[in-house]
Length: 151
Image (tube, rainbow, N blue to C red; front, top):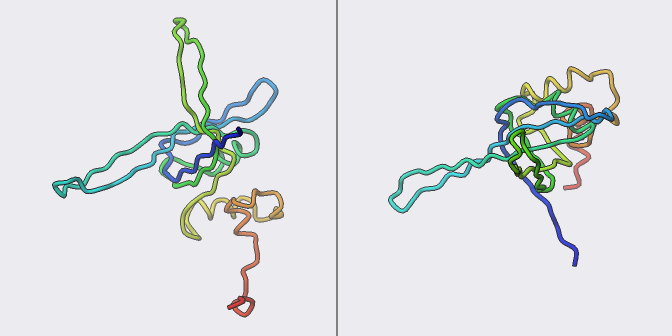
């Protein structure tokens, strides 16, 4: 039987993405993402818990993440959970759980620094050069006229 390995996260970056390149020239970006939940306990006191996720993006998505994402910014991530292991310098077996991103979307209101920077940097480029979920793509799309709405 086939399975599904899909993760959807909305959170804030813990630091700027770190961009590296593999021996064959592929880009890889990694960064921590914080997701928080808040609730009231039985006594009515407010509680909060933050979970940290290790995010990895490859190729063009890595380049976009490195260029536009900054510490503290909100982002929507879709990807899959992966586990990897390696031996450290002392020969100890190490393990790491990561989310390999296959889609990301910058969150924020129109005109926010993250959207403005993306639009300004690529004002001469065609929208086809951007992933459909990037702010630069959204900024380069014509606005729908109110008369065109079907309701």
